[in-house]
Amino acid sequence: MAKLLYVEDNEMNRDMLSRRLSRRGYEIIMAFDGQAGLDMMRTESPDLVLMDMGLPVLDGWEATIQAKADDSISSIPIIALTAHALESDKQKALECGADDFDTKPVDFKRLLGKIEAFVGS
Image (cartoon, rainbow, N blue to C red; front, side):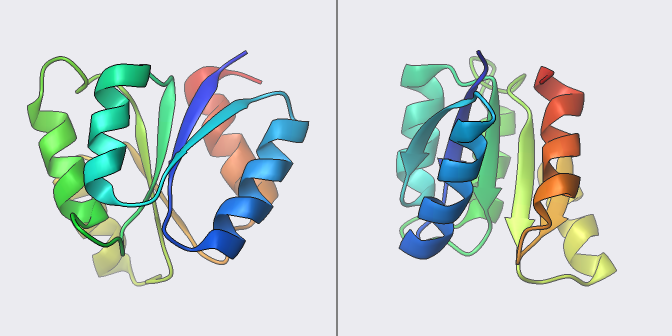
């Protein structure tokens, strides 16, 4: 079973997506800000990270940059999640080091396909 780290500060988003992914058989661990997400990447070794970009303490953009600069966690795939759906937002996420990008509100089927491409079903 793949372990997913979901970094999200919005409780409703966390609850909805984590329950749907759990029902699909994924182990879900959660962080509520970018710094906690980075710390959990180092201690929990998730198979994949779903990273909200608009986070407190350390935003998802900077957390992604720092994760990809840290050799101990740089190979963990990160899917950037944001309500900003412009092509420039996608480009920014990829330039920060995200391995993929998706928009909120989440299209569960599309996001699931992206997750499965990295970690399997």
